[in-house]
Amino acid sequence: MSMQKNKPPYIVIDDDVLNNMICKITLEMALGAVQVETFSNAEIALEFIRTNYDDATDDVVTLILLDINMPIMSGWEFLDSFDEFSDSTKKQFRIYLLSSSVDDRDKEKAKQNKNVIDYLSKPLSKEMVKRIDIPVNRA
Image 1 (cartoon, rainbow, N blue to C red):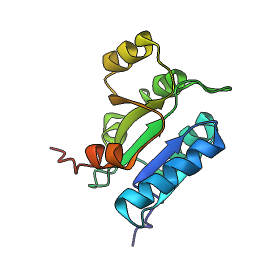
Image 2 (cartoon, helix red, strand yellow):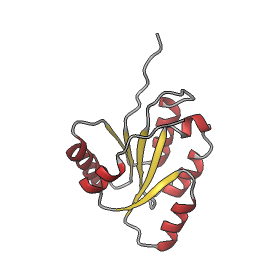
Image 3 (cartoon, rainbow, N blue to C red):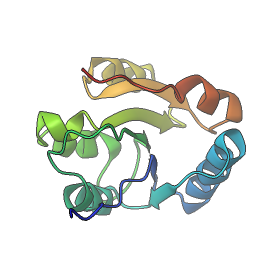
Image 4 (tube, rainbow, N blue to C red):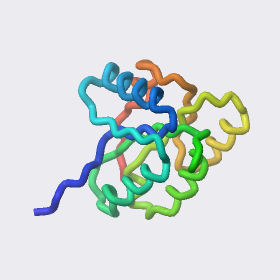
C-alpha cells in the first residue's frame, strides 16, 4: 500500500505572517473547512513541494497563492526554481500571484510566466476565492 503524501489543496507563500492568516481565514470562509498550508519562506515551500509532490499523475491540484516581494527568496525566484520541476509535478499546481505591488511591470511579467495563472491584488477576498476556485480537468 502506498503512503498518501501531504498534498494540501491550498498553499500560501508570503513573508507576511498576518497576510498568511488572512488568506487562510478567507479561504475557510469562502470554501468551508479546507486544508491550507502557509509558508513565510519560499525556500521552505519549495522543499515542501519536493518532499510531498512527485511525478504521480493523480488528480490532486494544489492552488498556490504566491507573494512577489519577499526577503531570502522572492516570488520570481520561487517561480524560476519551480520551473525546474518535472512537467508531471508542475501540472499538479495552479499558481496565482497575490501581491500588493501596483507596478504594471510585475503584472506584465506575471502574464509572461507560463506557470502563473493570474495576478491578484491583496488582500484576498471571498469573491476572489470563488472566482478562482474552479476544478481543473487535466488531460
